[in-house]
Length: 222
Image 1 (spheres, rainbow, N blue to C red):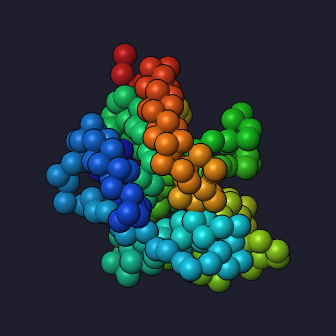
Image 2 (cartoon, rainbow, N blue to C red):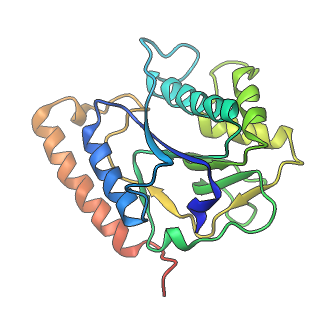
């Protein structure tokens, strides 16, 4: 299955988001990864300010994935990075990675679904990297040159691929995972997430949205 192709699997999670950790444990259980020794939660990095990024969360997400890649590079491992707001589709574990690939998008949103290789890609909630490409991507992210606002992690991956067109990218079709409706730690808090009563109401709305989304979600099972 798809997960067999990776030496390690890391789930990015803020220790304060116990709600997301609990839901992610359920998702891991669903695809047979609950007790897999390759799986570990990575304590997401946090910063006191946004720096050159659009928000503190975007900065933390970027450097968290970079740190995971650099650790995998030291071990010469392939790695699958999962964000803690990921929901797997039914049968995701049965997907087979075919052919020669270096970067794998398991979850994504494409501006141009008909031309994934050239499309802008939003989302980095399920990213896989071969052992050979890991150090190259890590080095690129560490020395990224930009003007204005620093690109978020998903944008930086697109930049890397466009600057290295020889790197083979594989996109799961359909995507094997989608982002779960939940309060974001990357964007600034919306007003209804700052007040307890409104926050509880939005939690109910998000749960209903998730249930409806799961009902209509694609599946790899017949």
